[in-house]
Length: 196
Image 1: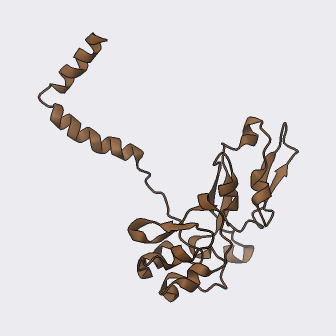
Image 2: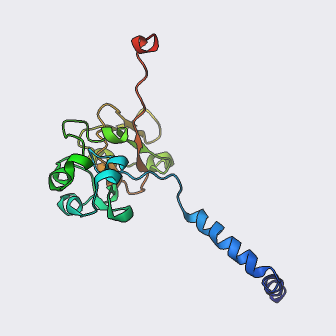
Image 3: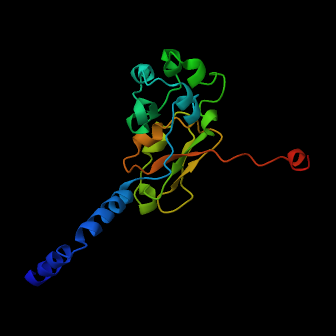
């Protein structure tokens, strides 16, 4: 062991050791940073709407009865489904002094401004390991998640994309944190659109 520590200490005594250390720390930090992670903004809003109009006043954070809105970059609101699901009550919109800029009209789909939202069941689901669980289906009010028992031995969770509202209640409920959200796929072009 002493031989090994001697090797490493001589490495850091090298004349260019300071330069090597200076270059390595940013690289190490980069390993822990998530690049390209998109922030989920409140329903009826989008990244661009928030950047254009949000004053970071925090009114929507305080108004959210489900406590799923938290302060994101520069104090702007972002959704955190680990606290629960969105009920689409609209309190975030009603409390915002800049609502006309930050939010789309509530008659639109809640996540339309962000491309739509769907639950996604990941590989960490306990069913993939043969452990019976359906907590997510119990928490899914629109019944978009269902246990499909045709897959043996314990089944798998099946998502009804038409019924999923993207509320996120299943994310908070999952004991393995195996559920996330993804943008809805764009609808396939119709025959009329293809030939237009």
